[in-house]
Image (cartoon, rainbow, N blue to C red; front, top):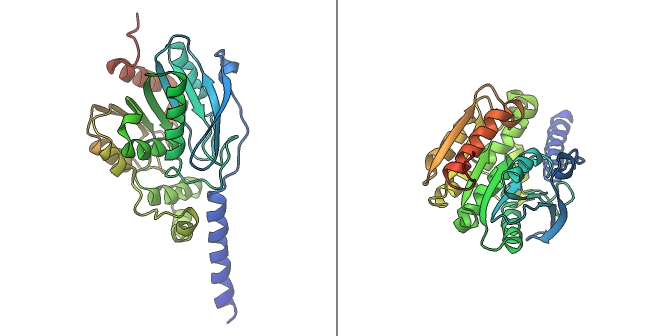
Length: 289
């Protein structure tokens, strides 16, 4: 009879432990930098709502265009460094940031994209201080894309152009999607109550936090959506909804056969062609000779 009490207690304790680990993710080491690829970079830091955000500033002399670049969950500023290098070669200054509780930035806990919107706001403010009157692009991967979506939903003036790579649609589906991505449908089902456990820890209702609702509020900002056709974390249907609610000029590029955030790794030429074509179309880059 005692097992009828012990087993549920162990299960609840496991859910609590996993929820706590999820908002205090392991910090992975750096593996690449703009300098390794041949671009100048400076270590920078600035204050966000929860603490100090650190990153790399990659300056392009006499450029009036800036890309603020946001990584995904359990990643760091290195994730999109190759893209920053390519943008720098095209005449764009770049700011690569570590979100709170990632890389070398501080913070009490990860907000899974929602709290990180404040880091995006602080990063844009820093970039505009470095390059007054800059034309600003926001580009993110996964959680970084979600954070950008939340940020521009509150303040559309943050960006002149936005690139969403593998953005989720709703925070609750992203949490379940993480476990589906990690261990398949069975694990996502077994751990589905973690949503209720995580709720008080992250101090927001994950069922009411939607990237798509924020994108719909952002107005006529040009938006490029990039998504894997076999993404099990942020489902393709979520990408389609995000795209459908966007009010301004927009384009959705599918990477068939690719999982979460895999397109730029498996098909870098297609990724960069889609990115640069979109930037040139909206006059963020100069036409190529």
